[in-house]
Image (cartoon, rainbow, N blue to C red; front, side, top):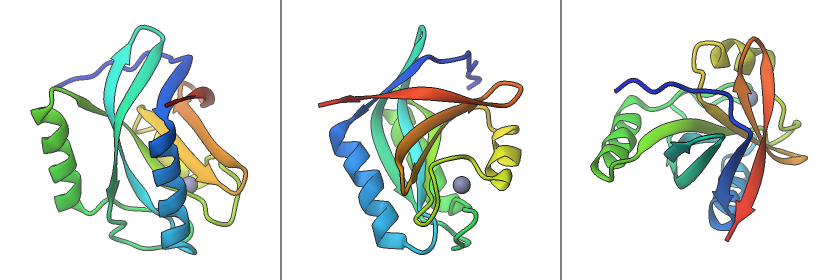
Length: 140
Ligand SMILES: [Zn+2]
């Protein structure tokens, strides 16, 4: 499976999943929580169908690492439903929803959609010769 990520203008994310990410942020504070975004890519936009939390196997307040088994399970779940893992989310319980230096270095090698929940809300980014913001459209 090879996905081609072109620059996206917006991402559709349901209210329910925005709440889930915020709840995960609180639950795992002060460490970062993380997970994957499952959905589909349409011209100019990404539709997130599911948000799947994944255990942070190296709990830290500066970075995250997916538990490999849970990551694989999420990938399998997406595949069964004919969807793809189109991005990742993680949380910044004590800082702004902006990619840290560590995040930026990781994003450069993972050019999918990145959603970060921080003290100033939830924001979307993708990498294209640098960090580019992606607008999150909240749907019901
Ligand atoms: Zn981060």
